[in-house]
Length: 317
Ligand SMILES: O=P(O)(O)OC[C@H]1O[C@](O)(CO)[C@@H](O)[C@@H]1O
Image (cartoon, rainbow, N blue to C red; front, side, top):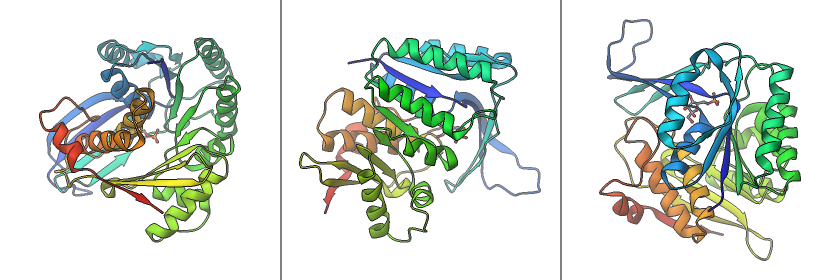
């Protein structure tokens, strides 16, 4: 299986706090709290490495608190090609209540200079020479990086004939989609932003997903949270086909990282050359596993085979 390059342009340390119920304006007591190296690209890298892939991580890391990331990269067994920038990598706060509701407070991130950006482009060029099987670009853009720079980065990877798997939001997503990544993973709100209209029901969402694939992507992963995922792709005749997966109902500890786990699971299946249905079943089960823990999903649990069996898959016409 080939190497994967996972970019987190704006990684984060996640401060995950477990609470009974969050009462704004009051002193809240946590039942548990922990800080862990994260960010979307890093989360994807962690899952892929756990499934046997050679992964290189890159993006921008604050020099002042890089140590905790360096230890995690070594534990995960991934190669660190992050550009170090001035200051700290941001801390994002995740407040998870007993009901499963999560409130996120995501910080802006360390500022990236024009020199830092050039260094990233040079790093990327060098890594692309090693022909990675895919490049994942995931998460928000840090201060100092404009959406069109993301578009150019995608263009750079595409020029090497390497597929880009993109997961970002807001203006960055719009600029990124215009640069035609192979695969994008919006959620329903991000899809509506692209469509420019509210998408009220499943039929409207699927129609927009089809339009987005037809606009030039190979595949779209539409993540629908607890309702599962729609995987839209071109069939051999060039028509857009859709597979829909529904996960079993899970006890929720934290939904943070479930989307990253889904993307990683699908990429793992792609690199292992599994059938679409097998890949979707695996990735949906892995993502379901992620919500019952703080952090990303794992496939080494005793009941993982059962979780896979419980995923319902149908083809949508
Ligand atoms: O880059 P963004 O969009 O702020 O998201 C970062 C957050 O997303 C996550 O990767 C979960 O998807 C968290 O680990 C992290 O705090």
